[in-house]
Structure formats: structure tokens, C-alpha cells
Image (cartoon, rainbow, N blue to C red; front, side, top):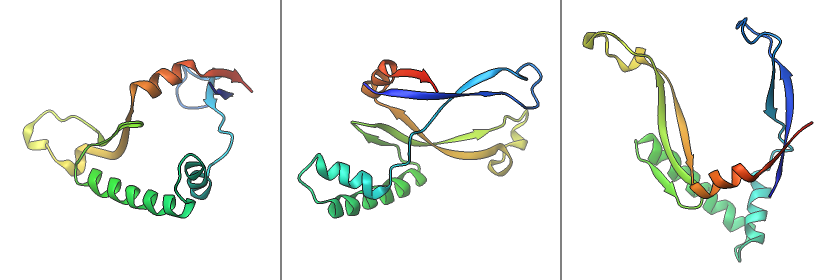
Length: 127
């Protein structure tokens, strides 16, 4: 199993109860490009990297279109993708309004139990 490296930061902000306290963040090693990801996938299969890239592009396009239409997408080895919303509550029915109640939309990924279990087994270390 892998090792995740963490960096620690000292909180500086508007919340006095957290002021000067330390917190961890994941230290990402690098960013994998689409080309690198497609090459890795091609190495794990009998498909050419260029074909992987075309299929990946088509899948991303379809995922985007489907979730923006309100569909939930299940990818068995990864998890479930769906649109979520951060919003506020109102007291009265007359105040219900999508434009003022919804602050932002977001893409949710609920990972599979296998990924969730793998995350529990990852080693952590402070940089």
C-alpha cells in the first residue's frame, strides 16, 4: 500500500479558537497529465494510448452531460458521481427561490467500499 505525505500548516485566520493551531494537508507529489494517465492505462491493457485518450475524452463528455441533466452515474471500480448543492434554509415557503438559496453546485464522488478500505490502510507521514 502507498504512503501519503502530509505537510503541516499553522492556522492564520478569522476564527480565534483556531488561531496559531497546526493542521495537516496532503502534500501532492505531482500532477499526472492526461497523456501519462492514458499511457499507464494502455500499459495495463491491450489498447493503444491514443485510443485510451479518445475513449477517456468521450467518457468525460458523457459524464458531464449526464450529471448536468441530473443523472447519477455509477462506475463500479470507482464510485458514484452525482451533482450536489450547497444552500441555505429559509423560514417561509414564499422565500423559496433557487437563485438565492443555492450558493454553489458541486460534483460529488462517493467512492466504492474497496477504495474506502484502501484509504484506511494507507501509511501517513509528516514531511
